[in-house]
Length: 545
Image 1 (cartoon, one colour):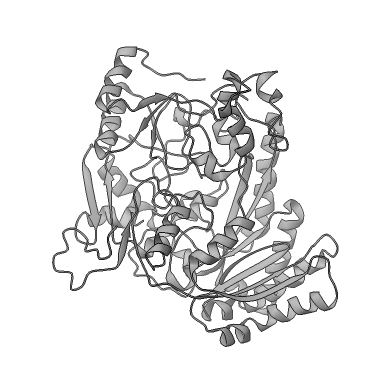
Image 2: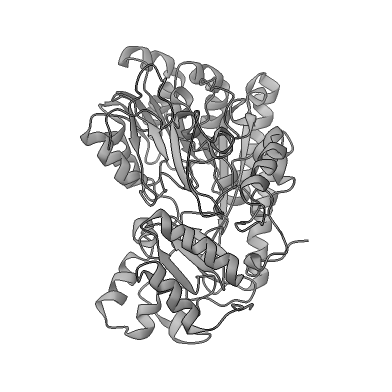
């Protein structure tokens, strides 16, 4: 494995002094169990190993465990996710190794810390990674032999430099490191609504929000939400953000200054909305007793998706459940709009299908819904995962023939993996302002679909490669019938034609802005704008022909 080009303790000591003594060594999440298996710290790890928030609050923890390992060499410090109290995976055999955890981290508290890191990286040729929360499916916040940056209210807001703005905008300033479960609690306490992610540990101002990868080693995604159909993507709601550019300057970007940077990163301030009441419909059942029920449910959903988008619904579904929320209809109109799904749920109950359930209710706020949802539907955490995705175009829903083709493709993908998730989280009813740099396919799509494959700590290199291949071949069922479009943060690690797939026609403009603000390519990450595939940052990725 490639090591640092510098080894002098004095060099690191000088950096530590520059950042106020907040430089520290990076260690794997489970390392405390190597030091003392009876310690409270080790017990905390074994009991919370699969908890996403616990992982994001530890510098050596990542939501998907393979990104704290070196997949190419097998160096790792992973536990058995099926039995996290068993320490044999790290105490015997190959032991505990740092894998892709950075050698050193800076606990970033001030913009000057980032400036110092940039200068240090430039002077000493030490590559950088940025870890906001570690909720990253593509390994862009970890790499061996790197210096890591660990990014651990106003009722009225006028963007700086916009003195001519006719009226202030209700907004919330979200600092780096804030996770959505924290932001939602703040919003609830202040009687506002924020459009954000559906997993607790997602960083509110990190990769979820921003649209490209110009000034970070974490790709920015645009930010989809179950509220996006009526309230837009995260990038649609940005007023201003502040960022340290590779020249060490702390810049403000908005519609009134550094406009090209604002466009590129659009998407970490979020426009706030008044509280919204959510009409909610939930249907669930056990597909193991009757697998045809999944196809029947998805057929109903696909046939009605265009109308439901127009009516303001957002939602999520897997092979055993469908959850829809609506912030614009009243209870009576919601029941009428969602009648086909409600009738399906009623049939399941009448037929006494296994674990059948139908819930038609109202949540008074987004936070009240999120609290229930996030306690029952949690993304895989502490488990190695290969994830792929596709944006489903509105044209896939237009005719009876295209709907049948789509349901067949979804069913085939789910038969291969058992993990298909349909997210009705596109801004299908929100036109936007044509000033963001996310792919235009977001607004031409009704659904964002994901699927995953997994493996455990003792998988061989060939078995890991096989799971990545399986995930990619499963999403091929949808690739064949959709345009080249996928959500950059939840896409195939080996996505073909990734530049067009992630950014569409915006890529060339983004590349030019990247070259303006980062001419020496100080910052880089996997499949980001202007990335360098030969970089040592990627030595732990599995090679792919």
